[in-house]
Image (cartoon, rainbow, N blue to C red; front, side, top):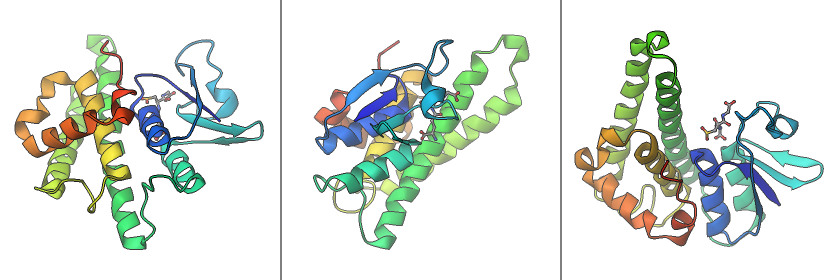
Length: 203
Ligand code: GSF
């Protein structure tokens, strides 16, 4: 099995953390989708990473489909509950965390444009999504150990990758001060080998 992605991609990290938690061997193929020579569109017509190559004929994207495939492919460390209500709540957490990450990507992409081409209204709209998503995560986490249910699962992985990406791209946000319960969760996640081994580069 091969996973195409980049070390800084938060969605790729989500798939890599799941692969590590489930002890699934794979080859990590680094291919930045914005490079002129990228081969990503050969595997995903949308030109986005991550892409999982299961075999010559089967590719899987996006990260949500990849993690569902991986969780059902191995019984080790189940990360998506079978019970419908619980499963949907875990997927809702994932959608919230991924959606927050989407807004961070949008802000960063906009801020990379030449200053006179940037839209402050667009940046403010995305920033508003990040603020509300973080508040919702913090409110829903409350004083619990894990995001959704009694045990570590995909909801915690998605939130951990989102918070890690915030640290990488918008460190000035200082979310730890506003949301100490999210900070506590992030600290706990950072100690897991699956998160340690997939930490994004600091530049
Ligand atoms: C998002 C993938 C994505 O935007 C998923 O896999 O969960 N919903 C998808 N990937 C970015 C890289 S990154 O920001 O992680 C990507 O591949 N961008 C290239 C492009 O052309 O949009």
